[in-house]
Length: 87
Ligand SMILES: [Zn+2]
Image 1 (tube, helix red, strand yellow):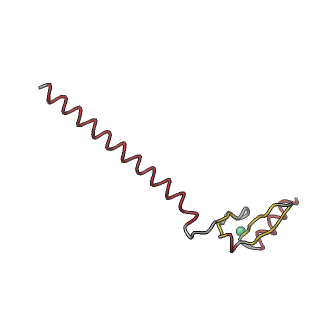
Image 2: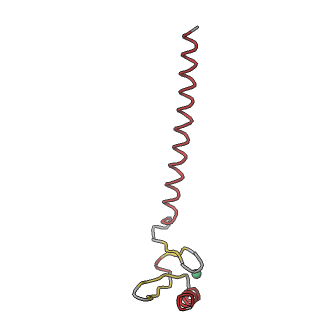
Image 3: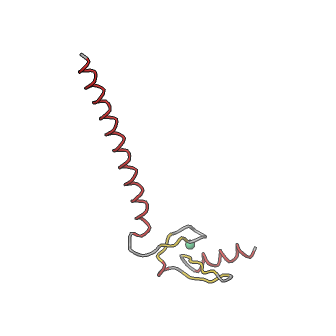
């Protein structure tokens, strides 16, 4: 009788542990997927501060403003950014 109860408790404990470890694996996979995503092409992606588009650095429109280099998806966004900085 006691033996059955103990086995039952151990079984519940093992199931609980299995569920916990499964959740942890799923979380770790989610994190690594998120980390790998921006470097999918093997090149650094930068975010356009105007339209929030991610562009590879080599294809970005570069502009130095007040000693800092900014990257945009195109000239239009650069001009919008300059206008918003000025006024
Ligand atoms: Zn843009």
